Image 1 (spheres, helix red, strand yellow):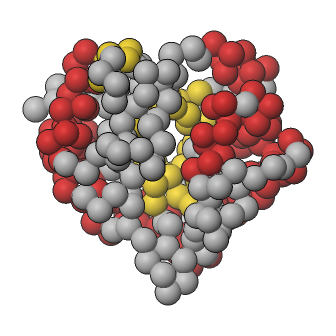
Image 2 (tube, one colour):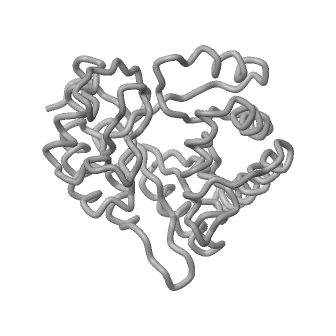
Length: 250
């Protein structure tokens, strides 16, 4: 049993038309927070509506999951965008999900960028500020990776009065600089349930994660992410939610 309670989040609603990704109906009861795609890397109006309804049904907090406008590349390719262009793009996407939520008498509770946009904002303060500028319009927190040196991000977020929500990844390996190991690197994605449980236990009990190169990384996180497109996501989340008492805590 994992004694320290930490919220579980997962990327959801990433199907598109007749194309299906993930196991949303099986995963939603196992998590606390759903990062719902907003149409620029995945999803469509009907998918978005069904995912919002599913989250409401299971009392799961809804977060917007905007991305670069790159549905062909699933939002995993970096795009060169002007700061204001990026800000307006995020406002556009979150605005769509916000309206959909309101139609089902619920709301967007936080924003978590997807894919390349998520990674790029952690490397480039100008991109981070463009994201923060958009988030400030919605009066919700921004979810981002818990990084060793977070003060510069706090400084930018404070200027816009945007709270930060820090996450760690249950099913991803880390590098010694605190970044996620690139997906093409061997061992970057953890598929084995026990390996995920071990990493989460180490994080919740000791506040540390062992990196791919064998170092111990100190991490303070508010929530844990498991990727919905991980082939073993349902098994991983079932074990994690049982170990952490997700349903009992809601």
